[in-house]
Length: 239
Image (cartoon, rainbow, N blue to C red):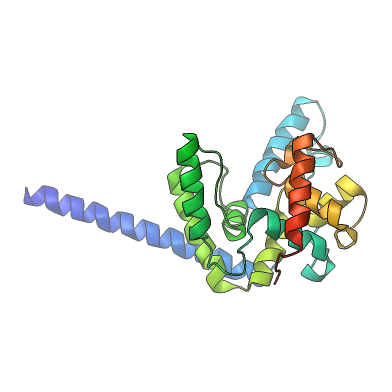
């Protein structure tokens, strides 16, 4: 009995130590991106590998034809309309919460219970940034817990302005398209700074399923979503 108890205790110590090391590693990465612009994120790496495999199957040279559309631009060179649109669509209380929006989580749980299935989430911009920067796209509870921990690290390590700047530059906005500037050029032929309010609302509306829509394409649902976002943008607060 004593031997079993000691073994369990030893395993617990090892597990705690591993978890601590992992969290310290993520914290080190968060501290680095607080002051440095990331060249490649976990999501970009995953999409790049998928693209290379697809190009190789087509008989093309992956080195020449498997390139993501990515171009970093500073916060000041991104349209204020896009900043407002993304906050209005994705995280209305962005300036108020500390990484997790507990009110939104509570409302999402109630809505999902009424529907009997998962129909909505409550991920904040900080949580989405955590996922895009460092994690996979799976939906396990372990990944969600790690996402929440990293979101807290982001909030504790940098300003809201930096978090939004990072998010706008690494978010996926189409097939092999990442970041606001690449998205603006791909879908509307303009730089991120020149996006109009309707264009910004469209980009914010497609964020949940960015690879479904191409070059300004719309549907009745998407048009309605754009109208809702345009209305909410009037009261959206940005850092």
